[in-house]
Amino acid sequence: MLYGLETRNVSAWFGDRKVLDRVSLTVAPGGVTALIGPSGCGKSTYLRILNRMHEMVRGAALAGEVLLDGRDIYDPQQRPTEVRRRIGMVFQRPNPFPAMSVYDNVISGLRLAGIKADRRRKDHLVESSLRRAGLWTEVSSRLRTPGGALSGGQQQRLCIARSLAVSPDILLMDEPCSALDPTSTRRIEETIAELRSELTIVIVTHNMQQAQRVSQSCAFFLATHDTPGHIVESGPTEQLFEAPRDSRTADYVGGRF
Ligand code: ADP
Ligand code: MG
Image 1 (cartoon, protein in one colour):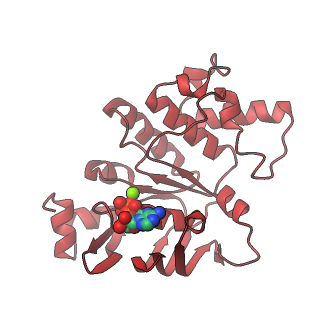
Image 2 (tube, rainbow, N blue to C red):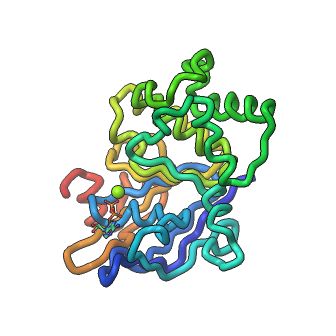
């Protein structure tokens, strides 16, 4: 089952400072949506809002609605841990537990997600998650190796496997390749292309070629000195890149920003 994500008039503040202004976006079930825009326009903040990590930031406030499968993830009846199980996050810097084994890294999110698994189930989850993350053949004989001993690209795929182990409906990725070399980046893009039929992916990227390679829809964020981050334009990726409706989108995707 594929799930979509809809935000309605989401605004965000850090203290008195408004950093997002009435962001509304519908992410269709399945496929990849890319969020693009200059640094500081609120893309990471927006991603954190999508899985209730924003509320963990000191001084952060929020208005608006985020609907997963039609239900507001901020409804008091929804448990934040369950929301974070259903909506996983992968960060810019790969952050496996460095001293923990590859095996234990993959299953490290199970307990918090309330998933009980015996040894056989764990073995299965480790293999299937690593396969889905495109890492199994490289590490199947090294499951006891510390996560920190893997290469940067492998560590990022380990983090993807860890996210997948709790069966998320949505995977949020915040510049997942910007700390990686071109070969590792390619591998992650291949993984994204395979995962997009299984779950819904939202990726922040500064790489315009990457946005075009991996995403089917796209949203362009912008902030200026006197306007908080907002979406200038969103739609099919091809449209944003080939026939943008707003001249600011054309300037940004054309590298004139
Ligand atoms: P982007 O990911 O597009 O570069 P961010 O979401 O990181 O943008 O940041 C949006 C704005 O919010 C920036 O002006 C940034 O300085 C500010 N900001 C981000 N995180 C915090 C925080 N924890 N406290 C205060 N301001 C923050
Ligand atoms: Mg960011």
